[in-house]
Amino acid sequence: MPIIMTNNEITNGKCLGELSFVGLGLSLSHISIEGIKKLKSSDFIFLEGYTSFYFPEINAAMKVIGIKSDRFKIISRRDIEEKSGQEIIDLLLKGKNISMAVIGDPFIATTHLSLKNYAKEKGCKVNYIPGINIFSYAMSATGLFNYKFGPSATIVYKREGILSVYPYLVLSGNLSRGLHTFFFLDIDAERGPLNASEAIKLLIEMEKEERLGIITPETKIVVLERLGWPDEKIYYGKISLLYNMRFNPPNSIIIPGKLHFMEEQSLEAFSIERNER
Amino acid sequence: MPIIMTNNEITNGKCLGELSFVGLGLSLSHISIEGIKKLKSSDFIFLEGYTSFYFPEINAAMKVIGIKSDRFKIISRRDIEEKSGQEIIDLLLKGKNISMAVIGDPFIATTHLSLKNYAKEKGCKVNYIPGINIFSYAMSATGLFNYKFGPSATIVYKREGILSVYPYLVLSGNLSRGLHTFFFLDIDAERGPLNASEAIKLLIEMEKEERLGIITPETKIVVLERLGWPDEKIYYGKISLLYNMRFNPPNSIIIPGKLHFMEEQSLEAFSIERNER
Image 1 (cartoon, rainbow over the protein chains, first blue to last red):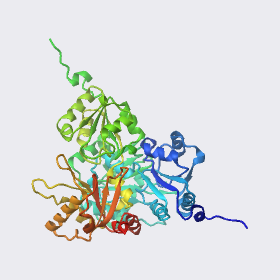
Image 2: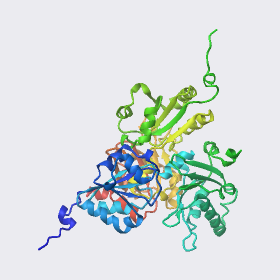
Image 3: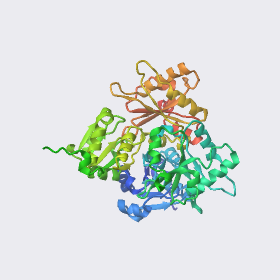
Image 4: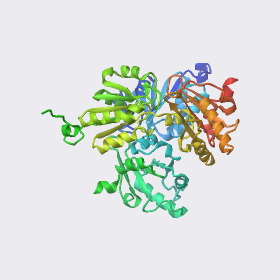
């Protein structure tokens, strides 16, 4: 009689494995000594490459860190949401130490929370190794004050012709309190990353729909290009000047609220008007 | 005739030095490979130890990284605001490569922005090397969603008997929009770090003054203890249960707004009621 052991039988119902969520930061220079140590000591590494971008290409990064290609696997959103979530849990129940390596910080996006909570429920040990994330990097790189940011939002592509005005409503709430707004830009599996100029055009469309008068040609905006990468650039200027530019992906956007004079001074350094002279 | 060269004469009016703001993160395990590289290649390092705490003690950390004590100096807030700002600029004008090493991220607090802008004005090259900061670490460690945080605030000690109700007003604005509020806690040169339980008592006093009904014995609160350190702990519960506890410094606090069920699930793991059973 063949004996098929279930995972629970193997480990006697206890999860002996360890799941570490490792933040890689935005580029290889950001990885922490703890992150490298954890990746090196893991039995297997799952890498997600669908919520953000990384410099250099993520295979190359693993090579630099010294991790052989048979010890990691790049997974898609579908893998994690429909399949690999289970693959990961299975390995954990077998007592393996698994790393889930994530671009930026593992939990700044909500994608990995359900896996974390699920693993915890199963009794597996869960570790969090933080990484530099785009949101706080953007605050620091622009010189805008952390405590003056309201909630952020994601500007998304139209889907089936439908425009989501949610980011506009978040912006409106923030501006009425004098707060800055950080916008993540959509990444679509087929259409790729949303360019900042396309995102600005979507904001203009939202204005036409909601008519609160907060997006005008005079509205000043900060475009963040390849933040945290060796060739990062920051642009500050009126929408009328920025909306026709083409930026190298990935991009994000900040619409500042009321500026402190020190914030103004910091942004001036990125002024496209000043730099064009 | 003795010749006294001014800095401008030495460098012909140009700043040839480089000022790097290096984020150390919250503990030694957070430092990035870029951060270590930059510290090691600097002519001199200034370390600030007054806006936050670090694990282990910062002298020990430099030793671990491999930086000899004659290559760095720990400076006070007064040094930077009244004196060493100039000391740093002088070294830069002499063409030195200087690092300003900061606990957490260099620009999440506003303290170092004026030095950065001043060095830029003088024409010095300025670099930013990001570090893990308490604000985004707290979001990730608690499982609360990044995009649901409103602006943060600092709860400060009473000074000359005067209570600052500013944090309470920020909280009120956030709660009315369903948003979470992160509170930094004051560090006083004489009184040391503000304990979370003292901070809760100050919030209760603010409630007595402003009477908006947002702080009650039933208000649920998250206390963050030694976040990012090997012995970090997170507590979640009613104010009536938490305000008499004594926490190991450093602490910070989150008052959640409207919770998503996945956020609730994450916070449940830190419930003091559940863990007392």
